[in-house]
Image (cartoon, rainbow over all chains, first blue to last red; front, top):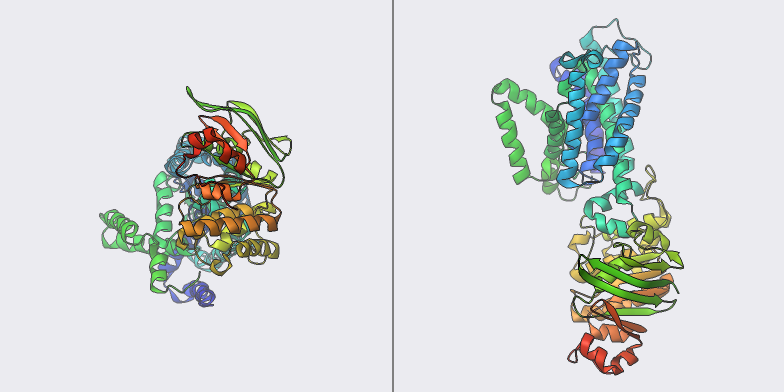
Length: 317
Length: 256
């Protein structure tokens, strides 16, 4: 029950942020919630299936570019339509990528996802007329649930309706993922993570399940990307660059891939820490970040959630 | 016949690991495959379980060609196996391991949004096998925290949870103490009866186990079947005893 209570408190706290925190911090929460959705998906692949993707920025990019295309080129402003289209396009692109990647494991899987990410990055960078090249495409303010909300200032829009919209999407995404990891399907993924050869002798088709997990994670990343792009207002290739894929893996490690909520905590800490370090040491923040990652891998392989669990071993999450 | 293999040959480059092996296993049989190291036992198991495709020959399960079809489809067709080196899911509990096997058997692995915890059929199926294998008390223990003997039992139990018609056990008692060996064998023979298992094939080095439990023994030597006979007949065949068993380990008139 402490788990449920903690979760309720956490959601309530996030919901309360716009009323209590300064605008600057409220705005920082927007990418946190978008990444939260991305990481729920990434961790189905990482923590539950045992596959580390270094190419998921590709799907974040699909989601963000979908929003930019639809709002700028097609006059579609509905965020619901954008999210659904992003999910669909993410799945369409992921299908062949997943088919090729899930034949491999470990570093080979990681390198192949990285390679697809690079190909996509080059594509958005070079096809200037379609993607705007390095300038990108504007992601115009989307309407929420049919409300245009054009009249209110951008900050009010982002810290008000958009903020709560993102929170609802994150909570829904988490609820759905919570069911998935506790389903018979989720159990099959865990057998594959632990011992694929043994899973096969139990009649569990490893390739097929890895494919499903990849597809679900890509759809989550695309939806997260669609949420991530709107507050920025302009979608450019940095979103798709491989370091972005690295960042989300870092967030997952930071929070702890062995725990359901670990990656979400990781996203939160990552974003605030990055912001803090950038203001503290503008030239050296990456150095501190890198050292921190090394320290986590060495001293706390379970991430921040691992530390929490070690302190409270009875807690079941 | 449940399982029938004919003319199995397997080459690794020039080396001939199996040189025309034929065998048949019928309902109600407990068959042991014995032979010295390098006789081709492991290759034979991997060919029979569809992991390896033979260079020549066929394997048929209930008259259906299963040659080289791979472990996933084979599990669905009613043949399960366990491994010589114990294979577990380290971070899953005993219960989760058995549930995974039952989920697979019932074809429920693609139920994305169903609750595993509320699936009575899966829970009951897993619990039944846990009880048969005396693992019910430890059902919430992580597999990696089990003692070696229990890991071995869990490996075999998860194969039984598929409710196969025939099971292939690769050294079911290797790596466990002599005292535990008999316990394991007793458990798996009685569990086999309870779940309606039709036949057991085992590869085993311990001749007490082999002669104590087998209806029939197949002795392999240099990739060929040297003998295929009852324990008593094997015991009486000086050539087989010399070549495959070695006098020291053979116990005359092995007891059941």
